[in-house]
Image (cartoon, rainbow, N blue to C red):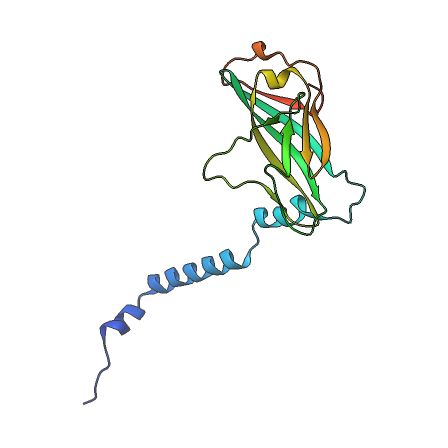
Length: 177
């Protein structure tokens, strides 16, 4: 007579479907931790580049998106900013501001939990800046100022505010409106 070592754990390990499930879980974990995501790759190469691209302008506006909200509008400015400073640039006043034709600073538009765009030191990066404009701000030029460098966002030509409906969005080319 011998002693038999049949415990519930041993019966558990004899089930083939549990081994298959364990193999699938391990394969999934290996795939998740070893593969690169497209977002990780883009953020390292497309957005942040070194200042070796000296031919790049310090500021470049790609487009502006305006969305009317009754008597005001949210203006989104897609811009490339080159930060030559030794510390990161947080894109808010007083270092980054939008000025109307009279020199008044247009207030930023932000939501309480949204982080302000940042440009790491010694790099150039595409960011979206948001502002809360009045109809009066759109009657003249708009100028973006970043660390003392300026760029025209809107020409002095008056924008036809009345042609927009409430909640309507328009995409405009930089400097062409």
